[in-house]
Length: 186
Image (cartoon, rainbow, N blue to C red):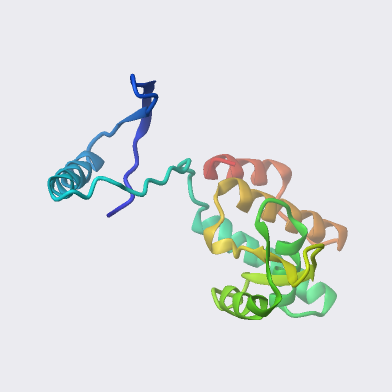
């Protein structure tokens, strides 16, 4: 099945205390939704009524211009402090909020999880910390900027701008930055 975008329409409780949720789906998504509904009807005929349903808030993805500007700042900071661009990028990701998850898992699974997570890309990082639960560790999983929404990308750029300014590096004026962020929906 595919992800379909729609707007929440209504939620009611029936006589059996089941929550019935409805969505309004507009073209072009409606055509895909109709195909999915027909497939679901076929499943029901064959006794397969249980579905897995996921909801998420649709957010505007960050623009490629935002990504390019972030890397311009990373390059300038890298030159100013004489460390690699990758290190500057990774440090920035760890320093901003809202781009990580912390989970508690068994110690023996941590290394495998971290290796798989880190292989997603340069910014995808993990670190382990002790847990109060015997035989477990806490793993912090940082997302790379390739999956950031506008708000997260804005946080990254704001952080990089502050770092650059502290180093005396010219950045876009506050007006230019505000204009870019406004265009990105930030």
